[in-house]
Length: 65
Image (cartoon, rainbow, N blue to C red):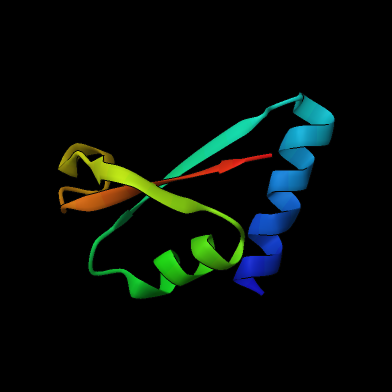
């Protein structure tokens, strides 16, 4: 359900808002969110500042749409 929702949001971002690239950050220990992003076509692109992920170390993911 989560992966389908993220994919739908990506489609909406492209068609309705004309966005070409989306970014999302997740905490390193949040394996479920990492899996959802990966299954939705996102790839890890680098570390996320803890301030961007609720005070925890994390990773930025990106998807070109």
